[in-house]
Image (cartoon, rainbow, N blue to C red; front, side, top):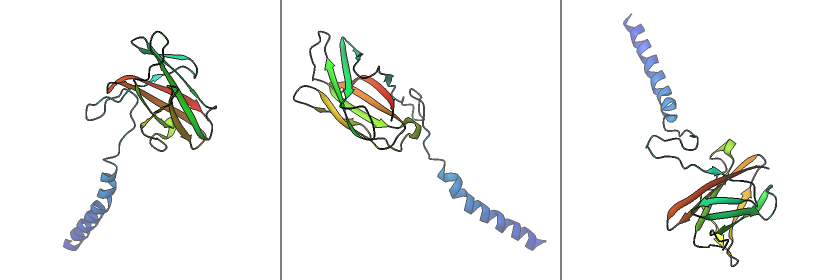
Length: 160
């Protein structure tokens, strides 16, 4: 009887030591949260407002607006996103910092570019190459900043 208890103890110990690392490996995995959801640290995930189709005015607040587009219809390969920012009177304003992150919402984290800054052209246009690596649903999340503070966040979703 004593050897039976020892055998059960050894089997239980073996199972615990072999399954514990598997159970713990999933404990630190991050969960994708919907926009605006709070994470465990209490910080709020940024909310990106849906933007109208390319070529339309996107109001930013404070009398400012932007118009965006692409050098060609987004398809596999590299496309250039172009943003023009305007003050209320229709005069171009190049005093903003603009950055964007592109990726596939259905594969969050797999193809994200991370925030990349737009380059300012001599014509006063903000330009960013976006690499479309596979067919499917895509999203570009644009952040417009002024004096180091977020002025606007918007997103454009499209299918390739």
